[in-house]
Length: 92
Image 1 (cartoon, helix red, strand yellow):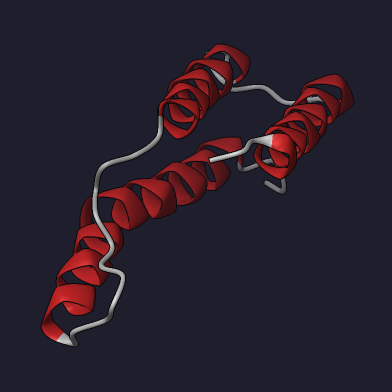
Image 2: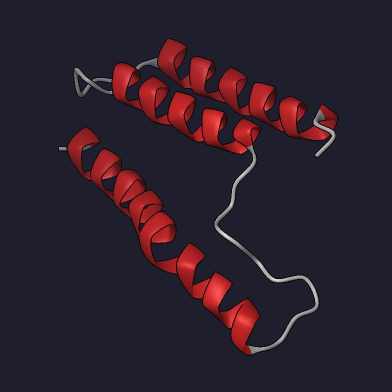
């Protein structure tokens, strides 16, 4: 059928996990090896850490029943704009 929510969630969450587990540490090592003046680190600001935790909780809460609708999508879009505004105004 056209409604393959399990596949969609699996692809989205799987991609996010791959970025977090493999790509981010790989880029940190590359910054050291290539000798950039400002090395990348895995030392995240408190705001970044809080946003990741809240994002995980929000997605888990919205997708726990494996159903989607326009309201859940709208909540995720609003959350995206809140995160964008937080990083825009954050002085770190």
